[in-house]
Image (cartoon, rainbow, N blue to C red; front, side):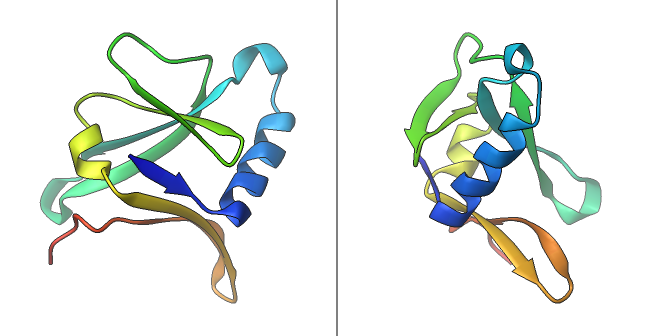
Length: 98
């Protein structure tokens, strides 16, 4: 379904550790309508999977994806990039078309 690089997994575990334990169990990834620019990605922590979610564990991180988003995210890679212009998560999605 999706992969998480070692760098991203380390950063996700670090961020999860900073949250109250009862509030964070999984990383939820989804796509949302973004207007004229197409879809936008949504990443956030959740207490657990919901009915119908796709769930995978990658590099020690439990990831859940809602059924609507799953086809759009299939084969994607989540990375964490620390560059001169700033740091943040990057989603490399082979399904994106220009």
